[in-house]
Image (cartoon, rainbow, N blue to C red):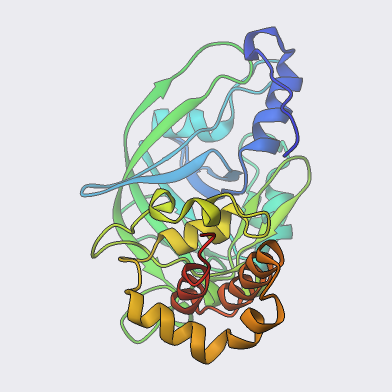
Length: 301
């Protein structure tokens, strides 16, 4: 494991700190925020300081931070202070370039819908428009705006309660739940980098909802300190609800590992390494239960 380079945020120049934060805290979902001013002029801009923070009530927060350059405020912030409503549109891969184009610093009153070639839809409950190309559109009431400072880079938290949600039909499964691969959403990383949340980028990690796992600390010491198994693999073993009983372990040893025990009969270290490598293969194949039995067969004696 490599060492760490530590920083004091207060000692860093603003742009340097900004780059480290946005590069290190990633990926971040994108709120493509549609707002209007008191004259009804539309604005559309993306923000990656964004997430959902509550289901009951349904609350999302995004932050149109003060600009680092010139310490000015953004039209989105000015609009929600005048008209406390917003539509947050989620951004999929198909519209990521239009979203980026809309992030340009256009003059007030210029429609980013038109500049980015996006289609507007009327909302049901709020005045701002929805983005037709977005797979998920959230009509929100702005409850309040909390300013975190007056200097460049200071966050301006726009706290929103969702009043109506729109999901494109083709991104929902039969139970009416959104499917990540069908959503094909993108997120922001540092610099110009984005991430696409679909395909091979997705993987499942079972949640220990029914009962907590036994924990890595319940594994035998020789397993915890394995030179083969990684921390992630140990965590998967530790997610088991219980250790296998002795009979199951002995049966697995006889049926699956007898060749290894014969090959390395006189070399305990080589046997342990071989067993842990076999467990590693089983974990990679999704058979964590068998992997746990495998590592339990070795007795350093």
